Amino acid sequence: MSRRFVTVGHRGAMAHRPENSLASFALAEEAGVDQIELDVRMTADGELVVLHDDTLDRVAADERGRGHGPVAELTLAELREIPLASGLPVVTLAEAYEATSVEIQAEIKAPACVEAFAAFLRSHPAHAARTWVTSFHPEPLVALRTLLPDVPRGLIVGSHPDADGQPALAAALAEIAASAFYCHWTGLTPEHVAHWQGLGYQVHAWPLRERDDLERALAWGVDGGTADDPLALLAWLREAASA
Image (cartoon, rainbow, N blue to C red):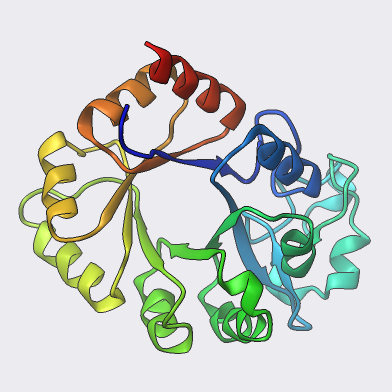
Protein backbone atom coordinates (compact mmCIF):
# COMPACT_ATOMS: atom_id res chain seq x y z
CA MET A 1 0.00 0.00 0.00
CA SER A 2 2.07 2.89 -1.29
CA ARG A 3 -0.35 5.84 -1.10
CA ARG A 4 -1.59 7.47 2.09
CA PHE A 5 -5.16 6.67 3.01
CA VAL A 6 -6.73 9.39 5.17
CA THR A 7 -8.50 7.88 8.17
CA VAL A 8 -11.39 9.86 9.64
CA GLY A 9 -13.10 9.17 12.95
CA HIS A 10 -16.82 9.86 12.57
CA ARG A 11 -17.91 12.10 15.45
CA GLY A 12 -14.71 10.87 17.07
CA ALA A 13 -14.87 7.18 17.88
CA MET A 14 -18.63 6.95 18.24
CA ALA A 15 -18.70 3.15 18.18
CA HIS A 16 -16.93 3.24 21.55
CA ARG A 17 -17.70 6.61 23.17
CA PRO A 18 -20.65 9.02 23.05
CA GLU A 19 -20.71 10.79 19.69
CA ASN A 20 -19.27 14.31 19.45
CA SER A 21 -17.93 14.15 23.01
CA LEU A 22 -14.45 14.99 24.24
CA ALA A 23 -14.10 11.35 25.29
CA SER A 24 -14.91 10.24 21.74
CA PHE A 25 -12.43 12.68 20.23
CA ALA A 26 -9.72 11.65 22.68
CA LEU A 27 -10.10 7.96 21.86
CA ALA A 28 -10.01 8.61 18.11
CA GLU A 29 -6.87 10.70 18.43
CA GLU A 30 -5.22 8.15 20.74
CA ALA A 31 -5.98 5.44 18.18
CA GLY A 32 -4.12 7.40 15.51
CA VAL A 33 -6.71 8.85 13.13
CA ASP A 34 -5.64 11.47 10.63
CA GLN A 35 -8.79 13.51 11.13
CA ILE A 36 -11.69 13.80 13.54
CA GLU A 37 -15.06 14.60 11.97
CA LEU A 38 -17.48 16.66 14.03
CA ASP A 39 -20.72 18.56 13.45
CA VAL A 40 -21.12 22.32 13.87
CA ARG A 41 -24.28 24.20 14.88
CA MET A 42 -24.98 27.52 16.58
CA THR A 43 -27.07 28.32 19.66
CA ALA A 44 -29.50 31.18 20.12
CA ASP A 45 -26.79 33.19 21.88
CA GLY A 46 -24.25 32.69 19.10
CA GLU A 47 -22.18 29.88 20.60
CA LEU A 48 -20.79 27.27 18.20
CA VAL A 49 -21.55 23.77 19.47
CA VAL A 50 -20.77 20.25 18.32
CA LEU A 51 -24.06 18.48 17.68
CA HIS A 52 -25.28 16.33 14.81
CA ASP A 53 -29.05 16.79 15.10
CA ASP A 54 -31.01 20.03 15.13
CA THR A 55 -32.60 19.04 18.45
CA LEU A 56 -31.47 17.08 21.50
CA ASP A 57 -34.36 14.62 21.24
CA ARG A 58 -32.28 11.64 20.05
CA VAL A 59 -29.47 12.07 22.59
CA ALA A 60 -31.46 13.26 25.61
CA ALA A 61 -31.44 11.05 28.69
CA ASP A 62 -35.21 10.54 28.83
CA GLU A 63 -38.56 12.03 27.86
CA ARG A 64 -38.01 14.99 30.17
CA GLY A 65 -35.09 16.05 28.01
CA ARG A 66 -37.04 15.89 24.76
CA GLY A 67 -39.29 18.36 23.02
CA HIS A 68 -37.23 21.45 23.86
CA GLY A 69 -37.13 22.51 20.22
CA PRO A 70 -34.31 23.40 17.86
CA VAL A 71 -30.78 23.88 19.13
CA ALA A 72 -30.77 27.21 17.30
CA GLU A 73 -33.53 28.48 19.62
CA LEU A 74 -31.77 27.53 22.87
CA THR A 75 -28.84 29.19 24.60
CA LEU A 76 -25.73 27.24 25.48
CA ALA A 77 -26.70 27.40 29.16
CA GLU A 78 -30.14 25.99 28.36
CA LEU A 79 -28.61 23.18 26.30
CA ARG A 80 -26.31 22.25 29.14
CA GLU A 81 -29.22 22.04 31.56
CA ILE A 82 -30.78 19.21 29.53
CA PRO A 83 -29.47 15.81 30.69
CA LEU A 84 -28.00 13.71 27.90
CA ALA A 85 -28.02 9.93 27.83
CA SER A 86 -24.22 10.00 27.78
CA GLY A 87 -24.06 11.89 31.05
CA LEU A 88 -21.66 14.26 29.31
CA PRO A 89 -22.30 17.93 28.48
CA VAL A 90 -22.79 19.43 25.04
CA VAL A 91 -19.35 20.37 23.71
CA THR A 92 -18.53 23.78 22.25
CA LEU A 93 -16.43 24.01 19.12
CA ALA A 94 -13.75 25.86 21.07
CA GLU A 95 -13.59 23.02 23.62
CA ALA A 96 -13.29 20.45 20.83
CA TYR A 97 -10.33 22.25 19.29
CA GLU A 98 -8.61 22.80 22.62
CA ALA A 99 -8.91 19.11 23.46
CA THR A 100 -7.47 17.83 20.16
CA SER A 101 -4.33 18.21 18.07
CA VAL A 102 -5.08 16.25 14.86
CA GLU A 103 -6.85 17.66 11.83
CA ILE A 104 -10.51 18.52 12.28
CA GLN A 105 -13.11 17.87 9.59
CA ALA A 106 -15.78 20.36 10.60
CA GLU A 107 -19.13 19.59 8.98
CA ILE A 108 -21.41 22.62 8.78
CA LYS A 109 -24.83 21.30 9.76
CA ALA A 110 -26.52 24.69 10.04
CA PRO A 111 -25.68 27.12 7.21
CA ALA A 112 -26.63 30.04 9.46
CA CYS A 113 -23.49 29.46 11.55
CA VAL A 114 -21.07 30.13 8.67
CA GLU A 115 -20.10 33.69 9.57
CA ALA A 116 -19.58 32.81 13.24
CA PHE A 117 -17.57 29.75 12.24
CA ALA A 118 -15.37 31.83 9.94
CA ALA A 119 -14.85 34.45 12.63
CA PHE A 120 -13.86 31.76 15.13
CA LEU A 121 -11.21 30.29 12.82
CA ARG A 122 -9.90 33.71 11.78
CA SER A 123 -9.34 34.47 15.47
CA HIS A 124 -7.62 31.08 15.96
CA PRO A 125 -5.20 30.67 13.05
CA ALA A 126 -3.60 27.56 14.55
CA HIS A 127 -7.00 25.88 14.58
CA ALA A 128 -7.71 27.02 11.03
CA ALA A 129 -4.42 25.50 9.87
CA ARG A 130 -5.63 22.00 10.82
CA THR A 131 -9.19 22.30 9.58
CA TRP A 132 -11.08 20.91 6.62
CA VAL A 133 -14.64 22.19 6.32
CA THR A 134 -17.39 20.08 4.78
CA SER A 135 -21.14 20.15 4.28
CA PHE A 136 -24.01 18.55 2.44
CA HIS A 137 -25.03 22.14 1.61
CA PRO A 138 -23.06 23.87 -1.18
CA GLU A 139 -24.10 27.38 -0.10
CA PRO A 140 -22.05 27.63 3.12
CA LEU A 141 -19.03 26.20 1.33
CA VAL A 142 -19.35 28.82 -1.40
CA ALA A 143 -19.49 31.51 1.29
CA LEU A 144 -16.44 30.04 3.03
CA ARG A 145 -14.50 30.21 -0.23
CA THR A 146 -14.45 33.97 0.43
CA LEU A 147 -14.58 34.03 4.22
CA LEU A 148 -11.86 31.38 4.77
CA PRO A 149 -10.08 31.00 1.43
CA ASP A 150 -7.13 29.08 2.87
CA VAL A 151 -9.21 26.42 4.64
CA PRO A 152 -9.86 23.46 2.29
CA ARG A 153 -13.48 22.66 1.53
CA GLY A 154 -15.28 19.43 0.66
CA LEU A 155 -18.81 18.64 -0.52
CA ILE A 156 -20.62 15.62 0.96
CA VAL A 157 -23.23 13.73 -1.07
CA GLY A 158 -25.51 10.89 -0.02
CA SER A 159 -25.13 9.10 -3.35
CA HIS A 160 -23.27 9.57 -6.60
CA PRO A 161 -25.50 11.09 -9.28
CA ASP A 162 -26.24 9.37 -12.56
CA ALA A 163 -24.86 10.74 -15.84
CA ASP A 164 -27.59 13.39 -16.06
CA GLY A 165 -26.74 14.71 -12.60
CA GLN A 166 -22.98 14.79 -12.93
CA PRO A 167 -22.75 18.21 -14.66
CA ALA A 168 -24.54 19.79 -11.68
CA LEU A 169 -22.12 18.08 -9.28
CA ALA A 170 -19.16 19.26 -11.34
CA ALA A 171 -20.52 22.81 -11.29
CA ALA A 172 -21.03 22.72 -7.51
CA LEU A 173 -17.51 21.43 -6.85
CA ALA A 174 -16.07 24.14 -9.11
CA GLU A 175 -18.11 26.92 -7.49
CA ILE A 176 -17.00 25.75 -4.04
CA ALA A 177 -13.39 25.45 -5.26
CA ALA A 178 -13.46 22.15 -3.43
CA SER A 179 -10.39 20.19 -2.49
CA ALA A 180 -12.31 17.02 -1.73
CA PHE A 181 -15.50 15.16 -2.53
CA TYR A 182 -17.08 12.93 0.15
CA CYS A 183 -19.36 10.36 -1.45
CA HIS A 184 -21.55 7.62 -0.02
CA TRP A 185 -20.96 4.26 -1.66
CA THR A 186 -24.37 4.41 -3.34
CA GLY A 187 -23.82 4.87 -7.07
CA LEU A 188 -20.06 5.29 -6.72
CA THR A 189 -17.81 3.32 -9.10
CA PRO A 190 -14.04 3.04 -9.67
CA GLU A 191 -14.53 5.05 -12.86
CA HIS A 192 -16.14 7.88 -10.90
CA VAL A 193 -13.25 7.90 -8.45
CA ALA A 194 -10.71 8.16 -11.26
CA HIS A 195 -12.78 10.84 -13.01
CA TRP A 196 -12.97 13.21 -10.04
CA GLN A 197 -9.36 12.59 -9.04
CA GLY A 198 -8.39 13.43 -12.61
CA LEU A 199 -10.07 16.81 -12.13
CA GLY A 200 -7.93 17.44 -9.03
CA TYR A 201 -10.31 16.45 -6.23
CA GLN A 202 -9.60 14.03 -3.41
CA VAL A 203 -12.33 11.38 -3.27
CA HIS A 204 -13.37 10.01 0.11
CA ALA A 205 -15.91 7.21 0.53
CA TRP A 206 -18.26 6.64 3.45
CA PRO A 207 -19.10 4.80 5.55
CA LEU A 208 -16.34 2.29 6.27
CA ARG A 209 -18.19 -0.19 8.48
CA GLU A 210 -16.66 -3.48 7.42
CA ARG A 211 -13.24 -4.63 6.33
CA ASP A 212 -14.72 -5.22 2.87
CA ASP A 213 -15.47 -1.49 2.66
CA LEU A 214 -11.82 -0.66 3.24
CA GLU A 215 -10.64 -3.28 0.77
CA ARG A 216 -12.96 -1.81 -1.84
CA ALA A 217 -11.73 1.71 -1.09
CA LEU A 218 -8.10 0.67 -1.45
CA ALA A 219 -8.78 -1.28 -4.64
CA TRP A 220 -10.53 1.71 -6.17
CA GLY A 221 -7.77 4.14 -5.16
CA VAL A 222 -10.00 6.19 -2.86
CA ASP A 223 -8.10 8.87 -0.92
CA GLY A 224 -9.71 8.29 2.47
CA GLY A 225 -12.80 7.31 4.39
CA THR A 226 -14.89 7.84 7.48
CA ALA A 227 -15.61 5.21 10.12
CA ASP A 228 -17.76 5.06 13.24
CA ASP A 229 -15.14 2.66 14.59
CA PRO A 230 -11.77 4.13 13.66
CA LEU A 231 -9.98 1.62 15.90
CA ALA A 232 -11.19 -1.19 13.65
CA LEU A 233 -10.41 0.83 10.53
CA LEU A 234 -6.83 1.43 11.64
CA ALA A 235 -6.40 -2.26 12.50
CA TRP A 236 -7.64 -3.23 9.02
CA LEU A 237 -5.22 -0.76 7.47
CA ARG A 238 -2.30 -2.23 9.41
CA GLU A 239 -3.28 -5.70 8.27
CA ALA A 240 -3.52 -4.51 4.67
CA ALA A 241 -0.11 -2.87 4.88
CA SER A 242 1.52 -6.05 6.17
CA ALA A 243 -0.15 -8.37 3.67
